[in-house]
Image (cartoon, rainbow, N blue to C red; front, side, top):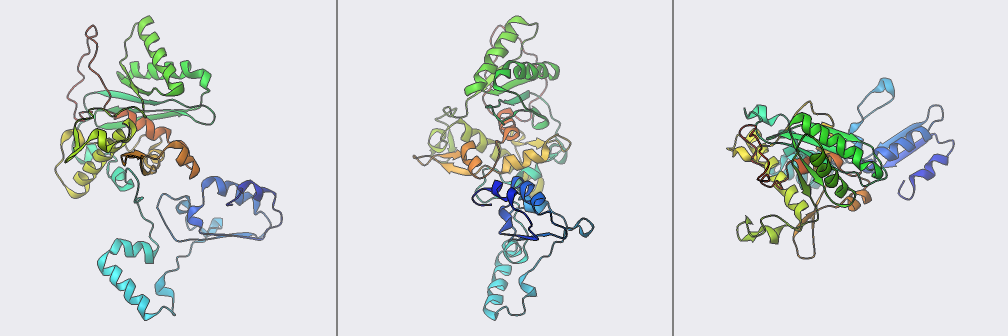
Length: 361
């Protein structure tokens, strides 16, 4: 599995496959391993220390009828456990109960320690507008992540004020950028939305197509470029006491992810802890939104990173791929939908206000 999972395909006659440290098992590896161990009465054993609740191994459920047996083996079942170890466990239980549950009771953690956006924050934001009695009003924006080619997919997330309510994902070749752009443009017309799109590489063609459609058609859709590697906006503004935006963030991508993370954290504290929250910090995800579970995973996966000057940045797609993580298309679309890159409308275009913008972004 470590060298080349494909080599397992050719293995014949296995009665037992034992996967140690199975918390690292991926869906792609399992799709190769399971059909390979196919002899009558064969078994697959997986032993592991639970890590995170969104790990693939946590998708298995105890189901004897369908041949899945799950057994938790904890310290309290060990008759040979030393008194020294029992004292250590008791100290941790009194000091940090959640850490005790994770280490000694095998309860998976909800959050990655080094994730930019914590999974628990995102879960608290599901239908947060309802929990906080906020009506989604104001600006409507579609975040459009353009596929880089190959197996990558196009994706959109639509927001209305503080609420992300719709997402789409589809496969298209690089030469079909015009077709994909027209699809998003049509959605923007139908929903009365603006568009924020990935303008790097292939995505540059989307801007040209939107302009052409505006010039030649009967509709005008406002659209905004998002260059993830571009310079931060409002560079001289303080992000933290004595720290300016330009000195804290490596690029626009980092600034936008941290901005969205701040909104999720504030919403979490409001929903879970009852803290006061500014209206423009509320962020909500519709519980019935398509790809919701995928979005939760993609938003909570990228890790914090730093450039050579000590400024924060977000784990790149290339580094995610090294960990076996696919391109987070839905998450990137979500981030663009909430990105603060909108500009005032041109003077010759009249934009009718749609209401009060509670999200402020």
